[in-house]
Image (cartoon, rainbow, N blue to C red; front, side):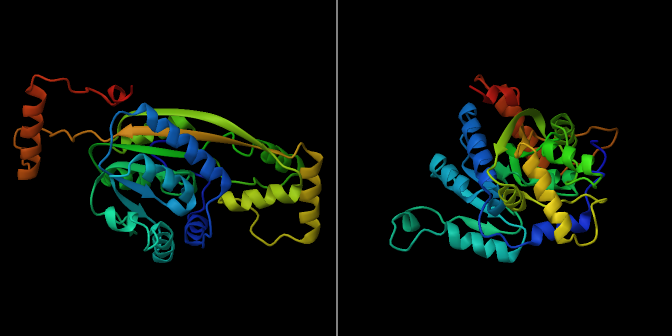
Length: 306
């Protein structure tokens, strides 16, 4: 899996999803972000700068919580389009009458990271891309050495009730396949991250009506499966779907995967004849001096935990 892109994701459908207009963050995304934010209590490192990746999809309420946690840290918000970036900029700018607007640095809203940060936060976006390894590489490049990544995404048990319902009716899958957390760990290492820590939990939501089920799912994502039904569905099919959902327990399970990893210093490869840049040499010499100093230095990402 570490050497392949998700086999079930349609690239064109993924691009359409990322270009869609977004008015507000989905409730489940905000809830997952709140739970992921609590995991920061385990980390001793206090970033002086951090990147919020795709905040409109990941949670604008969560962004406010992170700003409260790191009030002095410089923040950069990254969106996938200029329209979304402008929307985010309007939301994060404090009103002119608040002292925060003048006393603290204004968050930057961009479409591409140019300055590496010490933390990158990416909530509920990795499972909606057809190029996960390329996205992990972007996150790796956006981090400074010893910076850390915090992310969440959906896992394979997501929508298991709906998948069973579609199979029973002989319909194509209602969603593309989601990647297992162990495979994400392998891909993190392949992207250059160190000490990946993965865990997961299942969240089951119960709804009052089948219409409410579909409304919630529309806000969370789209079916990116290559073999999804390609034509338009009619009212008869829609009524059959609503009836099937109503006959079930009207429950939907989401497997949420949480990931955390560090960006280590790059290792210099030594051959019979090697060429390195001046910056690489400076970094290597600096690391040597720090490691030789008589003070405690964490030797792995796990030492960052209390």
